[in-house]
Length: 126
Image (cartoon, rainbow, N blue to C red; front, side, top):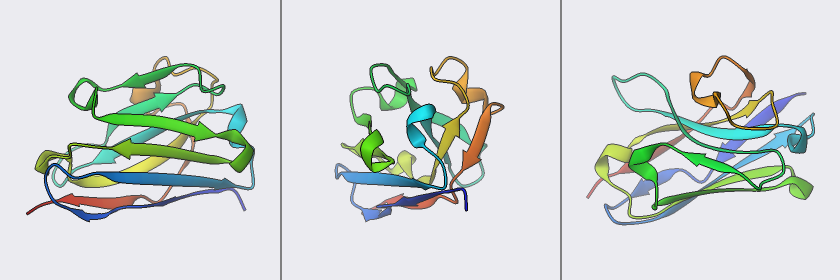
């Protein structure tokens, strides 16, 4: 069965940190650029970050630059998102996604995504 499964979400206070993981099964994650999207309550889903298939290139949306770090372990078929200095506006369901190309150009449109995870909820609140 082809799937992506996210984990690591939860409730965290403003200024705190969380590390999200996304494990692939049924396909080789290393063939894909991998990305994180999020959907906040009442808002459209947006691209947060992307990492090329080799791990050498990364891309971040401006609001998370310097606070979020995307990484991958192709041997473990796993994608990560380290989130620090979290803010209430970061509250959202976070999804990992396999972008069908090896580089991240254009990933945020979402139109080239082959696989989506079901998401993990991150709540930033005091």
